[in-house]
Length: 249
Image 1 (tube, rainbow, N blue to C red):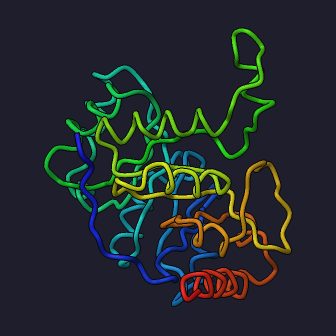
Image 2 (cartoon, rainbow, N blue to C red):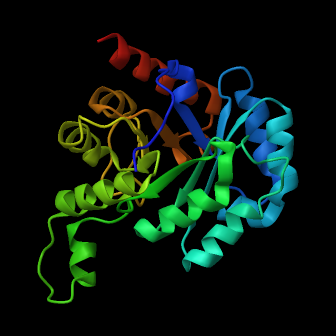
């Protein structure tokens, strides 16, 4: 089943997705106010979704902002389909991105539940950016050291074949995915992005914004380097400038 995504290439500022990893709408809105006019795309994960829910997402959409709902939905097929079908009508087709996690049947169920709205685009998680080969080895039944890149590529092929519009892939995987899957059109959303002067935190496979864009990422998700910065606006502007340089090069 081929994926269908728009061919347009977003402007550098539209490629930055800021992760609103906060406990409340009030805390998230404080950051949004600081980034007004520079950032317009935000990720809402479980932490904020459980604290603020659909009313907060509605406020973002009504303000003209784009929303990436990062819930990594993973359950039996019937539940996945029912969950997406149960999305409030006012949000159907208005959310930009949604993460799912599972196999081909999960993708098919999510597409059925989404219906004919076309959005949110479904993104499959390949391997968490907080995991490396050592972590995957612990999950291996024989304790053998796995080939992380091979696992990412296999999961990527399965997701795209099943109908996902894109992938969540760490910076270190982007280049290989674009090279090995060059005959396909799909989105790559890359988390764990860290500016050159920033620490890696709990992400083990990271790239700078410019490197990730140069390698072929479409969107970058940035959290703590911006949310914990003493000057979030300046940090966001610096990240966008780094992306611009990569695109111009």
